Amino acid sequence: MKPISRRTMVKGVGATLALPILDAMLPNTAWAAPEQLVQNRMGFIFFPNGAIMRDWTPSQEGDKFELSKTLKPLNSHKNELLVLSGLAQTKARANGDGGGDHARNSAAFLTGAQPKKTDGAEIRAGISVDQIAAEKIGKQSKLPSLEIGIEPSRQAGRCDSGYSCAYVSNISWKTPNTPMAKEVNPKLIFERLFGSGEDRKAMEERNFYRKSILDFVASDTQKLKNKLGQTDKRKLEEYFNSVREIEQRIDRSMKDAEIARPDVDIPAGVPKDWAEHVRMMYDLMVLAFQTDTTKVCTFMLANSGSNRSFKEIGVNSGHHQISHHRDSENLVSQLQKIDEYSVKQFSYFLDKMKSVKEGDGTLLDHSMLLYGSAISDANRHSHHDLPIVIAGGGSGTLKTGRHVKFEKETPMNNLFLSMLDRMNSGVEAFGDSTGRLEQLS
Image (cartoon, rainbow, N blue to C red; front, side, top):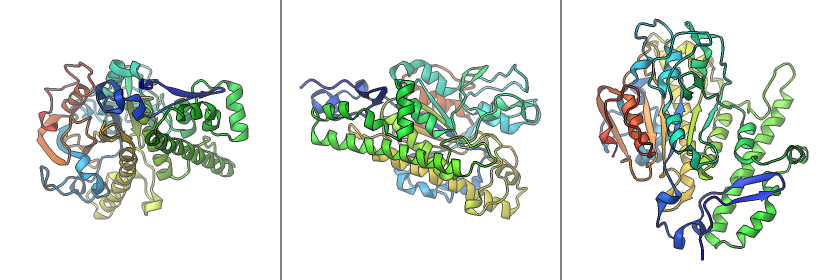
């Protein structure tokens, strides 16, 4: 039987839905030519204000390491992790530009470039690693890249010691002068991923009757199911259940927002609860990767220097405020709670990625997901020995289950160059890179 095209979609009146990889798409229903069907996915998750490094860094190196206090929530994924120590992002340092480490943190994080100190229109950083990958392989997917976040962006004005808010709000840069604005509203991301092709009338009808996008493609879906075996039918049903669940959660969030709206302008579809918002965004990342809608994604858990409080875990003061803890054990303890709370959400994401079967492995096996920041100790504004974790097997190109400690001041851009190699980008240098990180495999 001739394999179904990898680009097969189910369609309805004004709606189109991409599909995950099915066995029926594989030659002779075997995982015979993975390079034709699956390439690495690349994801970057950024958190602000550094980390309490004594509770982040494992004490042992190699594959006999134990996860630290902060990374403990990742214990079920220990064998799928690379904890990397010793990396530095030198362009996040002042280098003669004075204050503004938080703005430089986010601007240099993925660009490896020194941002121009300005709060005017002449912003300049560099092309970020995700956009280099998107430029090289983006045509293979519906979306070359996807940029999402939790806190809204500001692309103008002064935000940090003379630096433009554009630096604080973005980690993805298409050109040195053009940041890729992130989307924080799950509903709009959902429509972007799965609503392509919907005409205005169909979208209005769906919203009015609270219909699922799955209802619009039901007829085409049934025709496809008639061609599939039991395993594929089950896989398709699991995927559709995920899509419907996210739709329902977005709908509930919109209703909650309407109830809480009185005097506050709350974007429709944005949950009030931080963890729920984060998890919803992670779920959307999973679906984007699963359907091959994109292979490249960036996610800002907060803008750089964010001062959000986390009252839900007993931290009532602002994150940025207490990050300048001056070695107060009380403040250090509160910061560690925030670090661990954020890692718990990342673990949820990895659970979801691992649950999606794909070919001879899982979606996590065929991905490289970097979780980190370009600040380590926020109290001292350190930009060396950064908190970096990579999850996923990179389609067999990463040797995981290890804590790797690099020589001091090893450029983080060496890591990005190594990741770009695994995306078949053909790039020979990036930022201040001095070579590849051979220890990754």
